[in-house]
Every structure is written in C-alpha cells, then in structure tokens.
Length: 302
Ligand SMILES: [Zn+2]
Image (cartoon, rainbow, N blue to C red):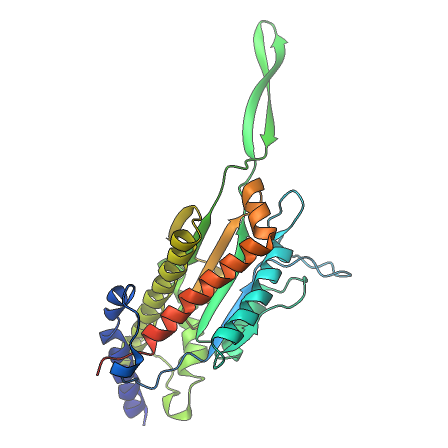
C-alpha cells in the first residue's frame, strides 16, 4: 500500500511539475477555459494572515511589536487589509474558502498562525505585513575637550523606505518546512497517502523533495504575480522578491508568500496604506494575482 500510495503521489506531483513551465507563458495569455481539461486539482482554501497584532490586553507574554507609523500601526492596517481581502476573494471566487489567522487586533503566535493554516488544509498562505526601517545611528560633535571633538551617537528615524516587497521562504529553513510537509501533507493526507518520509527510504525522500520544489516554485510564482500587479497596475515602488527564512512561512505546508504592503514609517506610504483607495488597490491587485494563479494551477493542456 505504501508503495502504491507513493507512486500515485509522485505521479500526481510530476504531472504538476510537468506543467509548471506553462506558468511563465501563462502570465500574458489569459486562460481559455473551453480548450483545457483539468487534472481535478482545485484551489479550495486560502489562508490570509494579518501580520503582527498588538499585545492582547491583560497579558504579560512576549509579543512581537509590529511596525508603526506616525499615526497608525501595522496591526490595524494589516487587519483592515485582510478583512477586505477576505470579502473580495469570497465575492470574486465564491468557490474558495478564506480563513483568517486573526480577526481581532490581538496578536497570535507564529506557531498558532502556521497551525491554523495547516489545520484548515490551506492551499495558499498569504501573510500581509507593513514594513519599516530601523533608526539610523549618527555620530555628531557636541563640543570639544582639550582641542579634541567630543561625540555622541544619536538615533534618527529613517523614513526613506517605500514600496512593496515579497518574501518567500529560503532554503536555509527547509528543515522546518520538511517537518510541516511531513506532519500535514504526507501524514495527514488520506489514509492511502499516510507514509511518513524516512531518510533511509529513497522513495519518501524523493516525495519530500518534490513537495519542497513544488512549494518553493509556486511560492515564487505567486510572489511574482502579486508583485507584478502591485507594481505594474498600481504603480508602487518595487523592492522585489526575496527569499528569507520566516517562521510562519516555513511551517506552512503549502505555497506561501509574505507581502510587505508598504513602509508604514514613510509618510506617503502610510497615507496610502490607511486610505480607502490604497487599501482597495492593494486588495484588488492581490485578488487578480490569485485569480491568475488559480487559473494556472487548475489548468492542464489537453
Ligand atoms: Zn510585520
């Protein structure tokens, strides 16, 4: 049974991988639904993760602090964006279930975010964040002593960051990803597919590597689609796509992208992030990117 299940999975995965090169061409050509058949793969569940909540009142735990601007903070902006994104996705793609990792301003742990994503069997994970730059340290002369200058170091805020940045998980955190895949996809799949990867078993290692390759590739592709919409359609400044080890992404056994929607500590970006127009544009861009991604992954040439 184990071998049969593995073969079935590897076959399914190689099918997906075979059609992966279609992506780069499909960027400009819109899907023609009447000329294609589908493999039966359907994008069903999207996890939307509003990054960095605030410290829940009455708690003393160690909560990460999100970025903040002059009048707004990451926890409010990302929650507003996530709620709008959920509404739009449900409107534009009614067959899709959207699960939010948090619906209040209170923060939740990275572990819990990943757990929610995996428990709900997400097909995609989109984390929404606001960026900021650390203070710059500057040495200035404050006087002289014995004809020598006396310095002090001051911190001045750096508001020069702007635009959008996409993050996908990097290779150096792949152990965490392996565990997530192992626990949630291979072990948690249907009973025929519950083979646990064993480092001494080449077949299960091939399977694991196929998953990693597939998720990484799909994550980068989705990041490209979102980045393209935000930059080309909305005219946002582009900071590009980076690979980085991020806990919440590594622990999601599904393609995952972290979207830095703008620099909340930059006055122009902060105004945009807090405006109806800005939020609507960001949400519409992400929805279009997901629509294109969905059409591509569900499409297989005849
Ligand atoms: Zn953040």
